[in-house]
Image 1 (cartoon, rainbow, N blue to C red):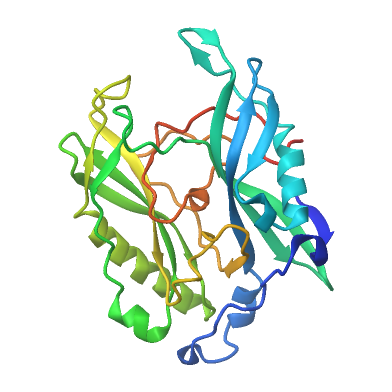
Image 2 (image 1 turned 45 degrees about the horizontal axis):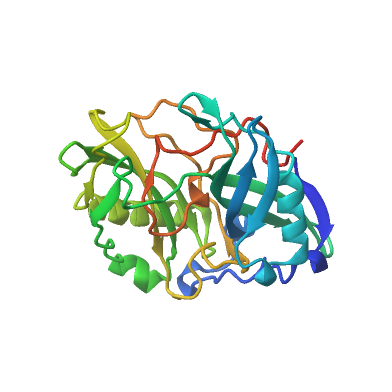
Length: 293
């Protein structure tokens, strides 16, 4: 479910600031691609979960820097969420869960915007936890020279298959969002170019695998790692708390070895750039829609 609001309550929505490289030309499908542009910001915080799975409080990081309308929408929705009760030794307990959430805005007519919540992650990123996975070597993939010269920028959301030796056995680009405008065919080629670079870099990564807990005996682990290709270090897609960033979302695809369904509302582009996210450690399980209805 989406909600429509006037722009003022949500701060400055930068819906028309995606650059168009000189090589993109004009017309030829750019207008159609522009219609798919959306703006978003990633919100981080914590939710307090009661023993029955209800939410008693929603705390947002750097709340003073966020638009008032965003704070109100996230908190109102979050207080309506319901989770599977968190169990400890078989007994339901109160829990505090970290949250990473993406707020989406699409421009309508006039000064109206359609605002929605999409993509959430409740996993606790603790590199010292022996039940979790952690990076050993995550060298950033090389920025393709062809992409750099053409003004191509965006974010690649990778799913990597990590073997028991900590090396990457396989990798897949689940989604590629682009932060520039061009014709549809050029957008497709740009997604392929960035994905190819990210996949090549990922195959060189190594991880410290879980050594304790129920997941320690798995034959492999699924790990999500977002990779950003930005020509402006201050404009990485969606990673600056309280700042709207515009981009063209790419299609979501599923890795051939991954069949498990995600919890409601999950989207890989809610993950923080460069973070290491163990897929089977999604945190508390959300049972209700993100919009809280």
